[in-house]
Image (cartoon, rainbow, N blue to C red; front, side):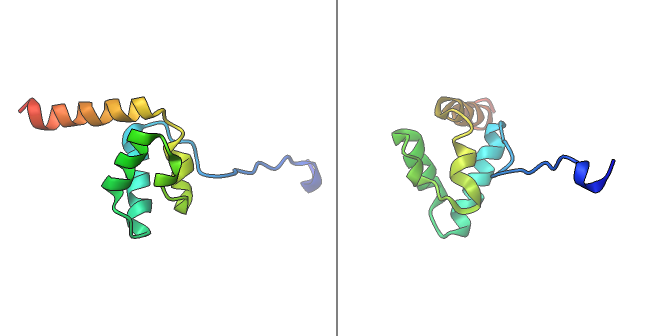
Length: 87
């Protein structure tokens, strides 16, 4: 197969992330890099649904919107309960 006959594959945007923990980690790091308070910004997003609470730096806004907000909230509650209440 000649060089001109190959099909190129291009990835646009960030890779898909489905794991809520990875989504939180990615958004948290991007927000911290830009000097925002990650906890305040993530809480604002989760309560309001307004994606502008999350920076577009490193495509964090796109990444966090890949997972439904209710799934993210469930992950937060589950993690809290497992870490703090089931000791």
